Length: 402
Image (tube, rainbow, N blue to C red; front, side):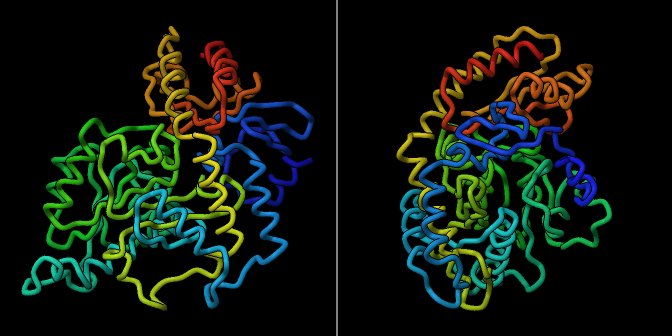
């Protein structure tokens, strides 16, 4: 019945596996017929804390009974607490809350452009010119995925994401991911920001190579350009660090977060930056009716506390190392490469294996829910609350299928 209703009344913009989920707890999901599955997608890393985490759900329920929405026309008694927690936990001075990840990326684009027009060269030397109105450029990487708005898909290198949706917003240059030489050539006097994922999730769990982010950081410092990192999927423990960029011992100027910021309970995203960058926004410049609402703030605060209290970052690091090691031991002519950090792993299959979709369908029959990405990659990203015993259970099924 459920599938029939979805297919009859829903837009055809998704191709889900044919399983109808009705319940979730921790790393486990149940379908409408009572069959049990282990979740190895974690809603694209939105449920790092596990499905229906008691503390986060309780925070949402309690807040819904008290106050749900004031808009930002008035203050509420939860937002300041959320601000304090996320800023002290991440080390950034200011937070601008939004709802979806794409909204947060759009916010970061606005921040970079306005900073370029109002402050870029003035900070260095008041006598020099600043970026002329309408000329700001932001550099992005091939294979990026930053969201689905028309501006964002306009600088995607995936043709399907753009097909039929133009005209697109100008002001973006695309370079090869991981190629510092290509990036240097793309910088001009009008460059205001470089927007990157420190590791590309939708691109196939791709990492740019050792030292790349350090080189990008150095280049941004030399050219007075903002380094903006999208950690919507890779952040909040997924790669065995609180943020993926920490593997390279750098710090971005602008950090974009979402997904696990709410533990999958409610849409919460944010842009983080120090005051010298965030202060380009004045009252009326930017906003969101729901951004920073009391429910979002209460949920976000609880979600961050769970990451700390349950040592989820460390669990991701330890069990990620273990799982990657075990996957690399699998002897299969179908496997091209195993790559990952923490509990964010890509199993890339050889083209002759026939695509990853059918392997995900076979894993589903064995009780393990995975999702293919870029046709030949099985993406592995379980909730970070997973145990070693549960990983061993999953490994048995992966070995059987590949």
